[in-house]
Image (tube, rainbow, N blue to C red; front, top):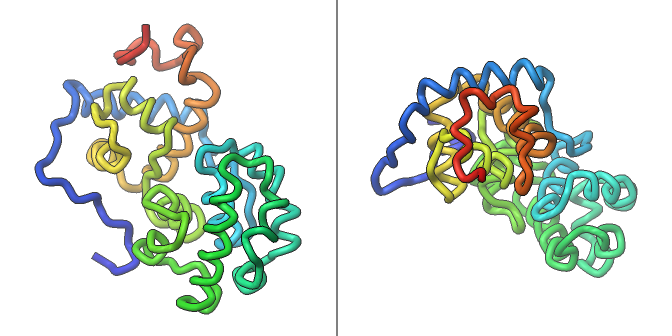
Length: 228
């Protein structure tokens, strides 16, 4: 395995996939491809650094709120070198309307400093190096690597996890294990599309509280796990 490739989560024993998951996966993929043929991240960015910052900010926040805040933030701090000179309290006013903004401001200041110290101010195209950045994690690394560098990866957020369980593609609640199950079921070349399309479907149709099952093209084969 290449050093900069995303790695599979470690597991003490392989978990069993739900019954029928392998047969259902192609149906899910076909439906998503018909609904969202151009699915992509809704975070707005022009550089890997901007994507990294936006992804860190998006934790427990909407993409809409992040996209509203980042233009002014990026004008003030267009790259890691500029942001590394900022204090958290300098960053806070730009992201005040985003959830957990104080902690995120600390993370951004620290990750920018680490990018300058270890990577000449550039976002590394290396999974382990991104995971090691303050405020980042496996999901952040998957988002950055897949969207900025083209690596096949599945970023499991709340939408992807919820839909994976409702569609009985995974019975897991741990995002890393959900990711591992989805990797088993879908072609590697469609992983990036899959996670973007599942996110869009989770936002627009299969919502957390009131999923619009009657309007869903997958209603005929969806097991609707956990839906009353």
